[in-house]
Length: 173
Length: 268
Image (cartoon, rainbow over all chains, first blue to last red; front, top):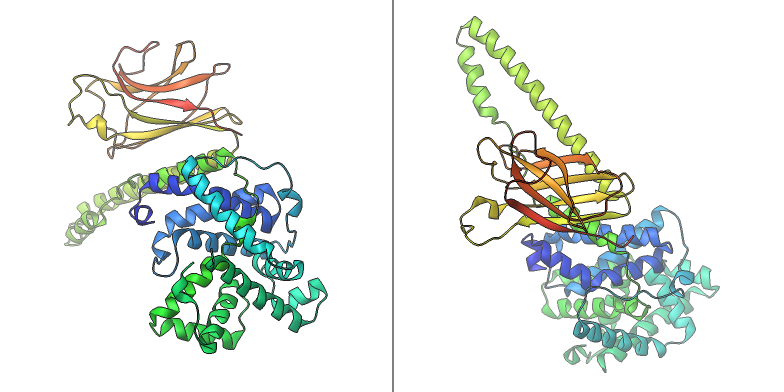
């Protein structure tokens, strides 16, 4: 990020190669359509380049910052288009290989992903659905309660318990 | 995750849970105020808890099956990034003309009239230049936005005896080809003027080594080149190169290659 802030295009290219798949996948999950996910990738990495001074390394790791930015911009786009399509259909299609990263980086990312998948396995479907509705669709407690047909208090409990479980599972790794 | 962050008391645990709700966007107004007050207090623990909550919440996408965007998204982005690093065109120094106006106001009506006409002409030229730049930018944006783009990164062609101080070493740019419109755009920065009595000429070189002349140009006083042209039909190009040639160009290259780069065929 420091090299990006000093206007080094190679640094942005390296960041793109390592994390564009993550941003694109978030775009597909939130927006549903590949072309909208492509626009999201362009928007997020351009913002990373053009407004690099917004990054505060004391508050988040670069990956976390990038994912935060991607999720935020994806939800903004989704709200603008009033399109609540989740993109689940897209995600079960053929999975493209991730480009531009070394085998070692690929292995590290795989390991991280496996840890998160394992942590999510410990959630009940209700907990998971409630958390994903908040995270990917940007819904409020009330909206999630309406969507899932559960009482508001139950949804609040699902989300709180689910997040605690995730935190504890990832801490124990 | 950080083992040192495991909460030891209910108050702390509650704050940690609030922080996760805050990060995911589900904290209500009073909870948000509480969390933001804690973060603003300068308490390093608050920053650490925020960092952990962010890492936990934003790890969720890692569980999704990863898919890569098409290659052209990367190339279009990098083209835009590289264009943003080029030197801006130097603007007219308004203080010079201000001095002229002040001097003219001294009572020299004739000079004032001449200067006024001169200023009007310069203003018109500036407006014309601005309009041209805007048109170029618009064409670039259309080209970048189009699918099936190929790129060649142009760099100084190194050869034995080329001095390290040769100004051509500073030049760099790119050639972008849009198959949809069959149009090329050439952009170069920091290109030194060609030798006296010469111009630069762009060559497109096919897989069989055929060298197709694609147009002549000279850089502006800032060393910048922005040049659009239609590609010759029916030829697949693999390399772009620039030589210096006599005015008007040459049907075959006669000068030394100054800049060169492979034209990469990108995934649609």
